[in-house]
Length: 189
Image (cartoon, rainbow, N blue to C red):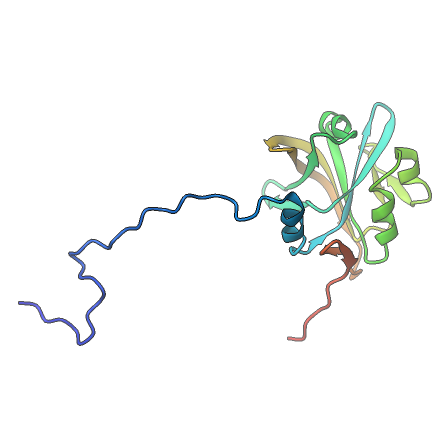
């Protein structure tokens, strides 16, 4: 006969736990505007992604940039399938991501709308060996070859293999949170 502790567990090891059937999964709220508001609670960095295709420089503001892998060096971002620049970014063979500084909120707005010439107007850039432009005053930049395109709902996830990169000292990065630009404030240790 085995002895039990003073406070026995809810079930003995030989007794199977009761398993509840999973509740039917469904969205709690199906309003697209509410979904966007919920997503906006996640603070992100702000970038401008550029490409050079058919002799034209293409650029767009993007906050879906993320690292994927250190070896090999891979990064990703996503583009709407309905974007007018979709072909440029998915067919040109590569792209450059410029991470904006906290002083570049106007640049982020400029690259969000308008034709390509207006987006680049007055913005200091550097043409790279790949022929793509990077924003000269960016905190960091990543020049990439397209590694993989992943179909994902109304977007394509663009994964790039980093062929060159750089950064500038301790410059603060621009952030986007609840549809507003800002910057992170360092917390005391």
